[in-house]
Image 1: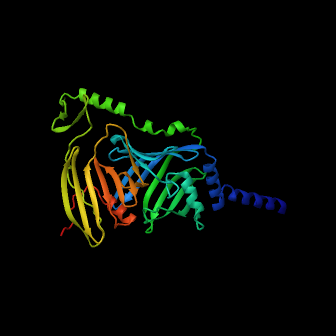
Image 2: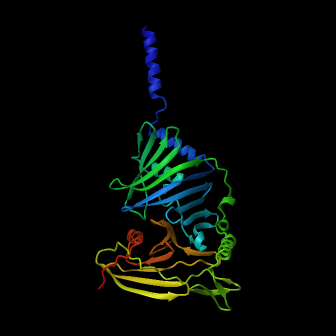
Image 3: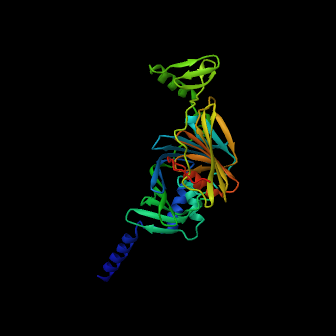
Length: 369
């Protein structure tokens, strides 16, 4: 009888312990799955919390060993698409709707945490000697510190896995335990069989289809009255220059309103606001003076006739509504048909980011002297 009881006790112990993993097991399993993947595809959503607003993106991530990346981000509010591309030629942030791209001199993505890149998540865990594991009925959850040098409020993250060790979600928190970034994975394919042909810059810009769609819309629109003379192109109230028989993509539109930052450093004020006309529309120059001097330039976004690559010595920057280009003393980005440029020799990087993120659909008038 004692023999059977002892056997039953051993079996019960094995059953109750079956399937449960400790931190070392979970980290090892995750690391091996990432390192053994020659290429992967991830699909999901990313939510960015800013104040009371949440900005939602659909996100598709593609990776190929070694050092090939493509991240397609689509803002779900305005359908604005941007793409981070890294291949043998360099690192780019492409905005197809404007036929433009920033080209970076950067070591991205190794220089910061990225909630949508698996190798970066592995690095975050390994770089935190105090990483911890929480086990629930449905999940393994790893908690680790993060490294976002351009967003100092982000302090730690929770990485969620189901009991089969499939990654399902990443939450990035600030110091007040508020989720600021959430990436939810809908599908994960660690055997995607991608090739270098999937990371070609020219494939991201299809000007022929764009022009075809534009011409089709014009032909189907009886109210479209486009006239191309020797020097100018007229369509309604807009004018622009001609190129052969085709009009350039210029609207000469006016800014509906001046967008002011809701955040400015203390002892700094709006000292001047100037509006000037350009070939493509209007440009507003806002000058802020005081303790921290800086300038913001806003103008109507224009579409380049030929694909334009703008070199940047810096890093891609995820703002609330758009991907931008961050250099040592400036930020450039596009949002809601407006091109922004912020420059300062006085602001810190995090102060520049705070000012840029506070520029939204607001016409709040700042104090002036």
